Length: 235
Image (cartoon, rainbow, N blue to C red):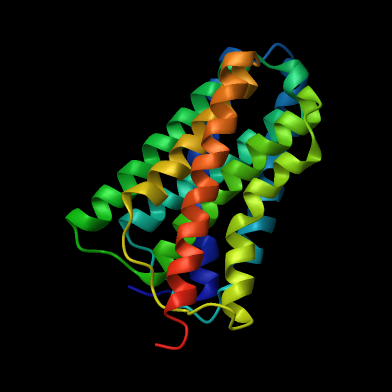
């Protein structure tokens, strides 16, 4: 079922109220600075609507289907927005909160894909929405390493692999064909998220080596897809 932009905003507004209440409870339990709660809730809501608005603007030509899988993906976007606000104020929080929210986001990532296949509710919008929300979490965790642990800014390039890929398609350097389903592609995405999360949570040499391994894996997957599409450009 497709909806107008006004109905979409109303629907997502209801969702964000519900998820905010749940996350507020989690924040009350875990935060060490109660006075930050109102600020965090406010900033999360503002950032969420800004990001979702930009997404709708750039993909406005797509039919926006508000089915169950896309609703779950939207919950992930709301949670990821909370994660962004938390990493920018990490000194005031128990690091376990970051771990909990990221794991919830990852579990929902698996759930939306499972339900979309189970109910046969696969849509182009849902596919793009899911990929963008995944990439947003990668960007947040990368930013946290730079902001909170003084990692090199180069780490942020991981989050921009997807947009390099899209630019190559838009400038006709590679084919715009739909990529075949790949377990490696999805596994590399999950692996990079888990390794980034581990670096944030543990920040020791072992997990840093794990992170380097995940960078190699996702770079290989990215390169493999680029080559596949390049070979089919003029076929």
